[in-house]
Amino acid sequence: MEKKKIPSNTITRDVKYLAAPTGNIYESVVIMYKRANQIAAAEKKELTRKLEDCRNERDTMEEVFENEEQIEISKYYERQPKPDLVAIAEFEAGELEYRRAGGSKSE
Image (cartoon, rainbow, N blue to C red):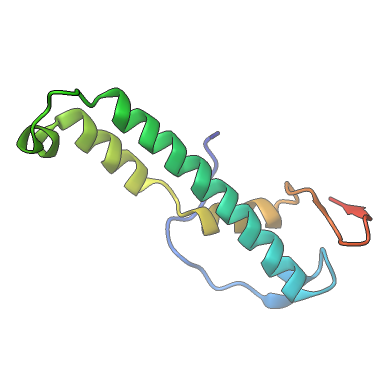
């Protein structure tokens, strides 16, 4: 995932600006929700893969909890912006492509 300037906490947004691209706030929310789910699933898959890479088959439970590499990897992902904040930033920047049920395509 590329580095973007995304706030790490929730900020107040004007609903009319979020609704503007679709003309409907509920459509906008669904688009951002689906994108946040995609981001979360990709991050979870990546985190699981990285944690598995540094896991040893003969590790005992105590060794797993004390593995510094795993701790650092986990801390890195905890510091990342939440998927919903990333999805909102992408939506506001016009970076999301979506289709309406009727098949018409929007940005």
